[in-house]
Image (cartoon, rainbow, N blue to C red):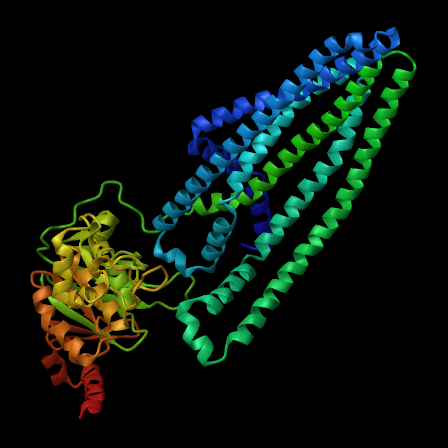
Length: 608
């Protein structure tokens, strides 16, 4: 899409009411009862100013009439009643404002939780493919930055528009009794400020979109400076000063551009305020002239002038609220874009069950795959069959496609071409959750959950209870049990140092926990991607001594650079440049003197 096309697409999305409608719907869904209470509060708040103005008129007229008639303090009783009523209205106004503040706060909190839930749901639903795209990360960044608080602002802006609108209707009706020209002056005074607000809302939004990548880079540099995973190298290589300078350079550029926009907006807002003040005092002069001419009383003058001031304030607030809704609509369109992302791994309309047990095996038929935006395929016409209960290994140099092939096996991606099937059923015809439920896997970059050790293992099969004995059984069988029992609170110890009373593990110990998590999953297939890369020789031997026992009755797929660890598998597939160049048992491949034999010999030299 070229630049003009992008601009047209952006303009359509910005002007679309859909994000605003979604925002208001989120407000309602987060608390229908609180929304009804808010509406009642708005109606009452809208009528209080009119009552206050009218009571003020009666008080002023009562005082001036009594003075003119020479009644003095004799008239205080009637005036006192009016003052008491005015005080009661004022107290009611304070009470209603207090209730309104509490309601708005509750709605904002509930709404924030609701929006985070929506973001989390969509983040989990999108495919892994999106994480390979910088555009996705920009979209996610904007949604995460703006969406959590923009709907809460909608609550405030809707309340502002509703209250000001109710008050404006009442007070404008009062002003129209005196002269229609006051309504014209009111409109003239308020509109320029709103036009300026809308204009700069557009500019701020477009600027924020253009700077998304810069903001993400700044956040990344902040993570490098503050994250524990980078702390050792930042200190060892003396990176602190350089990273701080880069961060400051990015933030300075963002800050200067934002300040320039704010400065220009402030100048125009100053001019708009000057116009508004001119209209206010011009109207005051007009009303005062009527009082001097005797066409209205002093109380009328006070009431009409107060009414104009209030009306100008209400009108400005209402239009400002509408402008605020427009601005929030702009930024909520980023949430709309994020929530509109569709899964690339499509679910079947009528899913077929995953075979249990697997009888014929898993077949890759002429499978090729290219990552989104990449020019070259990672897998090129792969033909591969894995029989039920067979233990196989995928070996090859870095970048040969081993891990990508496993991602396709787990249906984290669909092939660019070709098909994958199990017992003759195409992967695309099986629900992704059912398919993945049959696979236990430990990736080389396995997750480290800073949660209780028990939960770290239980995540392999979240359907079981936290006290299920299978959790400990999985830990015992993979060697993680001894590690966990040595911790201060055993299986209830929080792993990692991010939270209080947490206990850090070594890389090898973390890996044992990850392997236990994979074996807890009661799937028919288990995949170990470099399972012993961080273990010492003794621990490596222990893992592979248990390997056949742990994988008994399951199809096992092992990815490893250490060819000494794959000798016991049934078949070995050798990958190079995205193709399978050899396959067979260890002895068969050694006898062929091909690529596998060369790699094995190269590694064996280091142990002689």
